[in-house]
Image 1: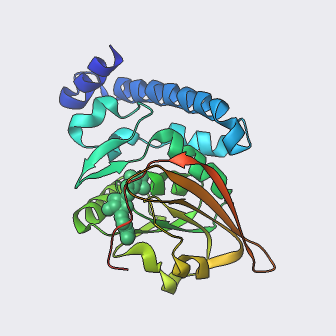
Image 2 (image 1 turned 90 degrees about the vertical axis):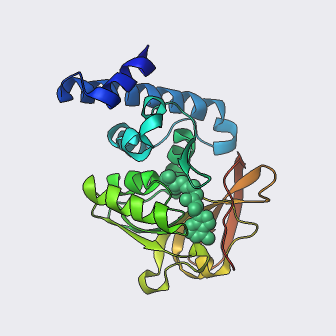
Amino acid sequence: MLGALLSLVASSYLLDPAQASDLFRDSRQQMIRLIEADVRDTSHYLKRSSLDTRVLDAMARVPRHEFVPPEMVDRAYQNRPLPIGHGQTISQPYIVAIMTDLLDTEPDQRILEIGTGSGYQAAILAEIGTRVWSIEIIPALGKQAQTRLQRLGYDRVEVRLGDGYYGWPENAPFDAIIVTAAASHIPPPLLQQLKPGGRMIIPVGSRFSTQQLVLITRNENDEFITRQVLPVRFVPLTGEH
Ligand code: SAH
């Protein structure tokens, strides 16, 4: 029923815009409840049973339906990854929420994202008040995300095309780094671009199986402390590195 209504809204705008935005707001609230239930179910892995309200508030504000292809709009608020073209996906909202939460950022901090994709994760990070530099290797996706983020007013996100394995040295060091594609190993250039006290979240493992979401903290003594958080499945980090 909700799906049918959403397609109606997306395809013809038969409802007036105020009603349409209410409908999406309700769908987002429902999505938040699904995320909260998943967080409770995985609290053993996450070592927490609820997420920072700033993260959930951001998830409740960012219009995910603007970040998916038109034919996916009616599924935009399901708690699932969705195809965005070029063999890539927009991550599952639960995964976006926990990765954002684990980064534990403060407003105005500098964040590096590898794998812009649709731009949704970058928008969530901007919505909680951080500044985001995001790198995408597929030019068409990167350009589309950049245009979309500008149109939606996310002027604290900067997108660059290229291989994120090497990071963005001109803007380093970063308070936090988030990698949203699965890497076979932790890229050393990214470790170098992390501030002491900073945190990095990255799925590590083979493209052919599930990977481990790994949280790395660079402590004030310049040691890297790693923790495996939970099994996940991401598209692979590609490139010539
Ligand atoms: N964060 C995205 C989802 C990412 S899907 C979102 O919110 O929608 C993973 C993305 O990583 C894909 O768009 C893929 O093209 C990109 N990617 C893969 N390897 C990369 C690399 N080496 N450097 C930068 N981006 C890469």
